[in-house]
Image (cartoon, rainbow, N blue to C red; front, side):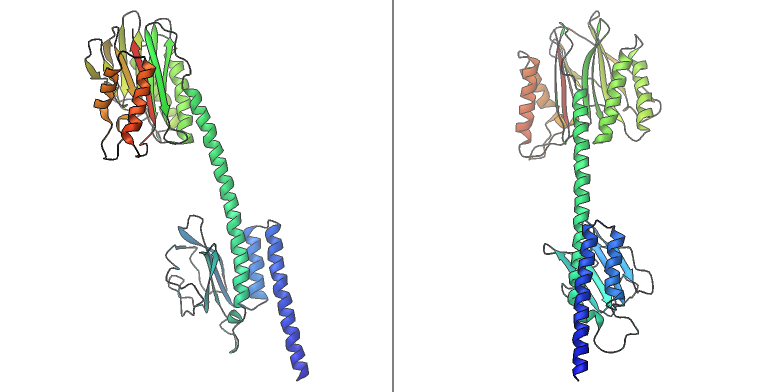
Length: 415
């Protein structure tokens, strides 16, 4: 009798020593930054080879909590789905339960389902069962339930922490990328305006997010012409910023490349946008060329919000003539230009949809009427002061409503 008790005690001590050793092995593997496959192999070996757990399936929830991902499926006779919808385990209760089968696992049956928690949230489920040929008696799954739960918790939490670190690093990289793209985009906007006695210019830009897709410019093209333009790239982010950077360089190069007709230059811009974007993005674009000798302004509007023109007599109009957005078609289907006479006191207001389409708490749009009223009231103040009034009026109008989109303004007053 004493030999039996001694043997049983020795067995218990050996089992306890093994469990401590298994915990230590998994912990060492985690600290040594072993791969996920190596960690899962340590885990499976401890439970199946040494403790006799027959069937073992482990699912872990992804970081976005949108689905369950299969980590282990050992000892099962047929294939287990690689992923499960997030609702899959909702019907299971928070403790271990006996199951005759789990729907969605090809009718595999398991003795115990064990939830794994982190910060009181279930992040994994272990489905475990004895070997089918096991003799009656104390079930290895039931016998080692606490150890299974402990070892699984260590493993899954370590894998989750590793995912979080990798995700944080990825997000830090994205933030840095966005920061650099934002700096690059800010460099595209002019810091100084042409020293031109016949025109006052002011610009304003507020991206909706860290980087946006709006752009404006005003520059001299030869001795007698001033180019004014505004553009908006479809989409946001780094791709839009890179395309806009390339576009700005092309605008400057094309409009300083000789005295070709405006329509010809716009067609060339369309070709370059197609080459750069490959039809995946397009650019709405307004460009106007002011000729100081003839006191005229020729423009082309490629799908952009029509700028507001108020002539010297106070008559207003929208500059709409042009073509579709650049990059929509390999060749622009139709294109025309418009012309207006420029006299002292005339004003051009270019803007993007983040201004006029911005809504307030009552779902009303800021609209063109409000914009025109501000311009008319500001005819006797500087163009910079008028811009400040526009921006403040927009903020007051939207109140607590978040910005709709990027907001860009380019205003020109002719003397």
